[in-house]
Every structure is written in structure tokens, then in C-alpha cells.
Image (cartoon, rainbow, N blue to C red; front, side, top):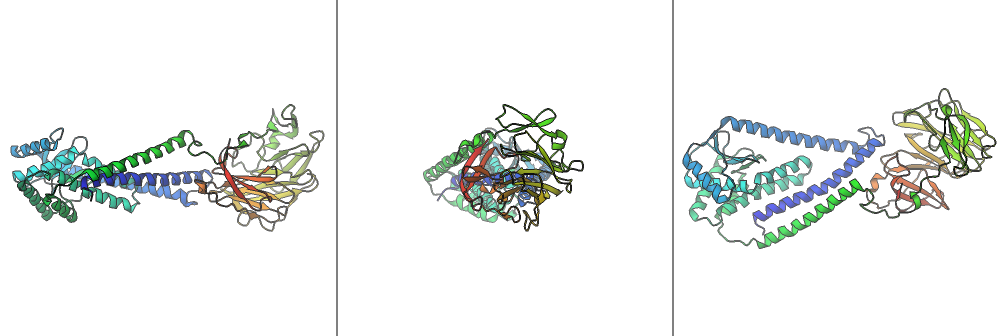
Length: 547
């Protein structure tokens, strides 16, 4: 069985392990809360945004309670504290300090506010004894006990557990660990004090323990080393004082050394994880697939001087779009701020069909300006006058004749609806699609972040989400919509990849990338899913980095 001096080391190592384990959990919880707020979840909408607040509030209450207890105790002790005048008591304290190996003799005071001898203070500890009558033998052993606490920095040991209790106030195992550590702290001190002592000293020490047991005690505080403890601890201490057997400390020391090395390795690994996450978020664990998606997207439209411009020959020549930039940037709902240029995904550029969608305000109706002959002739079609509070427009032409325009409107806070218009004559006329089912709950959902039709029948709408990926699919031209199902990936932190973007065409398959936030669709680490049946089913194909 391990001796108390070895067990106290074991409890400290277990405390470090417990802290490291919970640091991972708290880090994930804080990250999830931060991302939920970034993605528009109001405090209270997502439990993950409330749990960190509860934890911080509990930790703050614990800190304030401990600090308040210390201030009350300190004030009470100072009011009744006076230096010890008896020279024989000071001499006993000096002898005990010398025998214990203290660097300096602690100041000795008497106080009517304490009922048992104790050490108070960290940088400059002082010793307090209650008022009463003592024998030389009693005080010598008591002082030796308290001076041993000072030499071994036991008050700092207790403070570590108190600080841990403030951080992990919700963990019941910590309080059991703390109680065991405090118990073995006193027992180890007793073993050190009585080691090699004659029977008379042991008896005087045991008598004082019994006397303290009869008097009772004050509540133990983390910033002091009390001579008295609970009845069960005092009985264990008496057993140690009466035990004269010589025990080998080699097995316990070996166990502590092995566990200490393991703790250092675990802690170093954790520090390395944090360092890599801070300085190189992609070095901590390489992506499963690192491939060509680091390319920048091809630029085929841009903001010119007072007008938008488009190119069909990779930027060699640019042509102005025949629509005023003020019209192209007009939106009735400017939640995301006033547009200063083309809205992403509101236009499509190809040799067969180039089109720009804009408007949706009281001044500019929802409109599409398009060309099928690379700018030789342009046509402008008004899609609708009905919606004048449009936030975003998403335009796609799977071929030159079939086009789809998704507009978002009716926003209230972070919820909105979307409306789908379609053309079957290359953009001349647009009609609103009569839906039998729509994305979200009865057509209402969080903010739309993208929409894309890959065929005249199959299309997708992506919704901002902090709970699970929300990518809706239609296979009948937008009449009915269903939520896409993505199988579990097994990737680390998989639960945080909740942002799905519209699929991208990759040769004979569709690719969807799940991210942790909306604002970097083409950047960062993503979970990649692929489909060979136009999005009916998806399979996980790896973790990739996009930039």
C-alpha cells in the first residue's frame, strides 16, 4: 500500500489529468458556442451557447465565495491577533523550525479567533495558536507539524486544489479527490513529524490530537494549514502516530515517478496541440485528402468603374454589363450591409448563357439581364415586381434554356423564406414555381447561403445551420424538397461541421463540402461528400483543406 506522502503526489497527478480532460471538453464547448453565435443563433436558441455561460457564472461564484471567506477569516484573525510574549513558546517554535528545515522561523501569534494551531499565508506564512495552556512537549510537536507544512509548501498544494474546484465546480469527482488529498496531506505531515521520535514525544503528540478532537474545530479553509481535521481524519492520524513500523518508500516512489513521467508526456502533448492550433491550424492533424481544391476559383465577372464587367476569354478582354451598378447592387433588405459590387452567386457566366440577377427593392424590381452570344446582344427581363425586400439572389442556368432564380425575402431576425422562379425559354419569361413542399419548416428557415440547379429537374438550396447540415434537394424542378442525408464521417470534431454549401460539379459526380462557418466557403478544412446519383445519396470521401 502506498504511503501518504506518495498518495498526495498521486492525487495531484490525478488532478492534472482531470483538468486536461476537462480542458478539451471546455474548449470544444466554447468553440461550439462561439460558432453558434457567429452563425446567427441568438443566446438561448442553442444550448451550446448557454452552457459556457453557466460554467463561467459558477466559476465566478466559487472564486467570489472563496475570496469572501478568506477576507472574513483574515479580518477576524487580525482583530484578535497578538504576538506571543512567552520566551519558552518562541524557543519551542524556533527549535521546531530548525528541526523541520525551514528557511526562516515563522512569526508566532496568539489569537482568540482560532481553536486549533494553524499556519496562515503563502509568501510569508505566520503561525497562529489559540489562547490556552500548553506543555513544552505538546507545543514542540505541534510546532514541528506546522513547520513541516511550511517547508513542504502544503498551503500552495491546498490552493491548487481550491483553484481547481473553482474551475471544475460541477465535477463531483474533484471534491472526492480534494478530500483525499487534504487527508493524506495531514497524515504525511504526521508521518514526517513522528519519524524516529521516542515514545514520549509520540505520546505527547497523540494526546494533543485527542484534545483537539474533543474541542472540535472551525471549518477548514484552503489558505491555512489546520492542526485539527474531521473525526475520521484524526483517527487515521492517531493510527499513524502510534505505528512504529519502518516502511520502505521505494515502491511508492517508483509508482509516483512513473506516473509523473506519464503526466509530463500527456501535458506536453496537450501543449503541443494548443500551440499547433494557434499557430498552424492545419498541422495538428493532416487532412485525409489534400488535393487540387486549393486552386482559386476562376474569375469571369468583376466590378469595373461604375459598371460590372464580364469576360469569356480568361480576362484578356472585358465587356461592360448593360446595367447600372446602382441597379446591380440594389437590395430591399440590407441586413448584410449595402452591396458595393456583384453579389456572389447572383450571376452565371458561360459561352452558352451569361446572366446577371439584381434588384428586389422598392426602386428596382427583381430583374435578369442576359446574353447568349457573348455580349453581342443583351436582353433584360423583369422577373417580378412583387418582392421589394429581397436580401439575396441566387441564379443558375443548368442549360441555355432552363434557368432558376431563388430569392430570399420576408426576413424576421435570423429567419426568412425563399421564393423560386423558373424560365424555360432562355430567360424571356419567368414564373414562380408552385411548391408542394419547401425548404425549412413550412417554408421558413434560417438564412439562405446558396442555391444551385445542376439539371432542369435537380436543384439544391443550402441553409445556414449550427445544429446539422441543411441542404435541401429537389428532383422535380422545385415543386418538392427533401433534406439531404449525410452519413457519419468519423472525423474529429464532426459535430461542428454543420454548414453545407451547394454542390459542385466534379466530372461525373457532385461534391458537397461541410464547413464550420459560413464566411469562408472556399477556405479552411472541410468534410467532403460525393454523390454519383445527382445527390440522392452521399458518401464521405475525406477531410480536405481548401484555400
